[in-house]
Amino acid sequence: MKNGFKGVFDISSVSKVLALCILSLGSYLIYKLYLLSSQINKNTELKISKVFIFTTIFLYTISFFTLIHALANWQEPGILNITLGFHVISSIFDITWIIMVRNRINLIAGSNKGDKLWLNPFITSLLHVVYMQHKINQGLAKTAI
Image 1 (cartoon, rainbow, N blue to C red):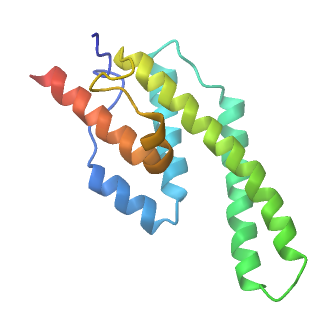
Image 2: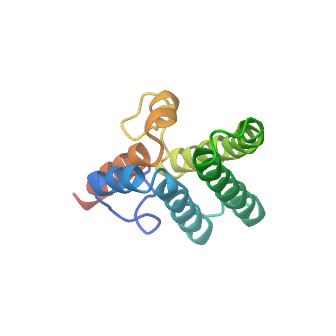
């Protein structure tokens, strides 16, 4: 199995990624996806569209701020419907982006289902960039040996 992580990704603390995701109320997830996408786009031919990336970031930002607005104005009955609409659209783009990054990391790692570096779709759907960083760290540690 060819592991192409070296020169594409960097080792980062999984604990730090988890803490930042929690403390930032999920905003670090978007930032980390952007970093991983930038590293993929810069160092491989497996490009993720910049238009898609910026559209997803824009939708996430709108969704995040409409949620804050809805929580601050929870007594207004119509506000929840607007917030839900933005959140659903943003979530579809976020999930698509996570899948795109996951698939590219699997291709870069040269991993298939069952391999040590293979990103399991179920675990990825739960832990997102925390799990991705864990597998990247495993792959980079493997190449350092």
